[in-house]
Length: 345
Image 1 (cartoon, rainbow, N blue to C red):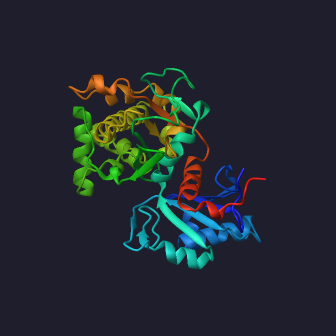
Image 2: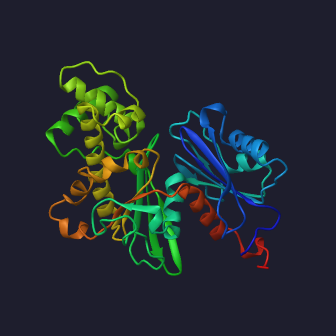
Image 3: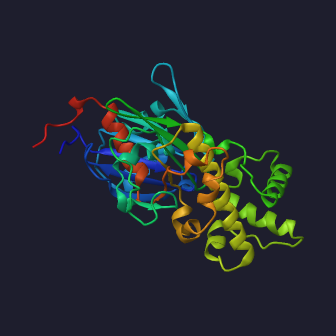
């Protein structure tokens, strides 16, 4: 095992609701000291990271950090750049500002789904639940092989909707960050078209994130009631997910999964993701049974005339507890020179 010189690495998965931090003892280490802090309690990314170190790792001085954030990260021409959390209400910033605030020698900021993509080759069968397709039982032929020759994609709803890719290159992989959650809703039924019409009237646009997210599930529920001429009790995504016996909640969950399946098929076709489409985010692990029994997979494949292209592509739900933290570690291992590690003992 190789360990970093000067101190452990700080890694993070920062979303619109929670910011999860951990420490890693080098490129082969697993995240330890994992803690989740409410995003709303802090003025920005640097303040949240500083609070984690002060509260849970006093006296620790990380030698490097990779912070994965739920929003666009734009690289600058001389290694700088900017980041912005789409749903946190934090001001935009630069990695250099965060690095100086924390006093860490090397700091990188990446998109959270970019980090999820980097984690894919490190996931095993126990970290994945197949959602239809070639594998039908948990752990059956769903782990992305380390030597895969086909691109993979990762996507998923949480506070927002993330999409990223992982492309094979000689000797490894290259991650592809995107803002694929901002594409148009892939409505496929008359009922979905009516929901999309209500969304456009209310928000002026019908982008996927506005329905395929926590707030989006609540919108679907509300719009279905409006279409039925009834007043809907305002419910959160968590309340809808727990109330699947209610007919309207069940319909909202079913539409949510079906729309996600259509979008996943679009992503697979766009990226040529023959290595699989993997689902992350904070919502789906809470509704695994609903997802596996939904129209997700049939809508994934329903892309005439490309059904034969899509049918062999695996789709699976990531159930690893911290995949973006793993991906942030992979990013640091690739970007830091080998001289930053001690020789193995």
